[in-house]
Image (cartoon, rainbow, N blue to C red):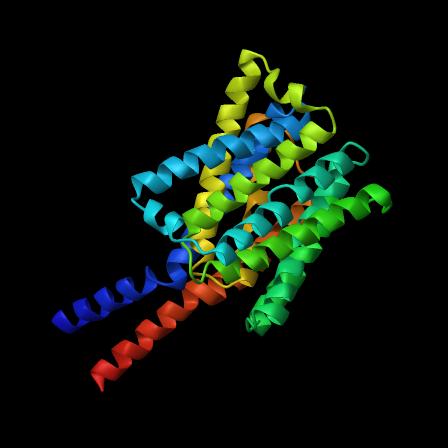
Length: 320
């Protein structure tokens, strides 16, 4: 009985450390993302999207700085080298500003369905970048799961055209994948909270410069009280997203972290079904099942079954 207790204790300790910690944090990120997408569908109405993005980024940067002070991690910021500051600035440029500007501009020219399909291919590009630049090993179950995710994404969104707006959205998606790759590299030496802060702080500065150069700066400070309330609500979602994702990414391979984020799709669909009375078509239902199947292959095979297998081997050794 004591040996069994020790084995279970070792299993529990092994499961909740390292990559498993990253798994649960990114899983939480996906839940936050799915809920945030649902909430943002109400929030963006009547907003200048560029000003809206700037204010959210700036508010989250302030929240993250306060969190860093609370966690007593400010000394790590003071110790940042010039190279690390430049790396954080590049994350803000490549991931926290330019792709947002491209995406929202293109979204005004195309359908949300087309934008959704192209954006959800981010995990494919992130996985390729991780394979070539970070030397991450990609398993056969992951490839099979990725194919299911892509097919499910097609049935959920069914892209109808591909022109300049779609090219801009694809460019934004590639930039986000590149930013994820840079972030994963930088996370070797920095905490997730500092990388998230760098993304939001420098990203907001770059967007602020864009607003100033395009004469849209007054619109960033011309919101009504209800709009300000929506900005604060969506900023809290964004804060939870970047904090859990970058903290989780520190402990998790990029290709798996980016794929797990696709769990946000079923969550958004469920909320739309539960609160807006929307129904799923046959093709969407099929796509949803494929997406869940792909996520099981990636998450289940990598994170849930391996610990159980290790536990079985441990018990077998003890019995022998």
